[in-house]
Image (cartoon, one colour):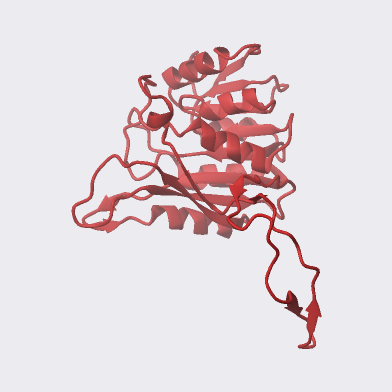
Length: 275
């Protein structure tokens, strides 16, 4: 493929664009793909299996991917597309490192026959053991300053017990794997982003901080309006975004370019789509 210049924005079908990439070059993938026809994406129907295999190929050993996805309700039942996708990722070699939850602070469509739907899955997948984990330590502990009551012990292999040193509870601990926060609509109150399914900037930032280091290469194969790219620019990461729809690539470019010190873009097209 061509020499990398960042940010790199690509117009085309991800299954085709990714084939032009060398293998083992991406440190982290963060994306929320179109799923179950819950949104209209200019009539685009993505080839999940082909794209999944290409994502595994281009990810570095120890690289991580966060796949944010939900399920449609069809004929009264959930599609479970999310789980089928996770199982296929496992089948082709990914490790299911964690199943996290993105819990939204509000909901779009009130439910009449079930509890209101306020979450999406965030499957954390890795190619081998994750090479990077920078835990976010912002969960305030209720019992800050206290130490555990009684004697702290762990059971040894021979069945006996080992005594552990008592620790004083710090003010902040590591987050749980359920992340609750504003939706993109709440983040961008009184603003309009012309894309049917934008995910919040805070969510992109926090995953990028958790699984990557500065100057690493981050890919969003369904980049849409460019939220992942905006977070990469803010956090000094190198961004590659792919989208089949030209107008979304233009939107992503505009959003990233609105940040101070934005770089020149490497823009290219594939499958005959002109920029």
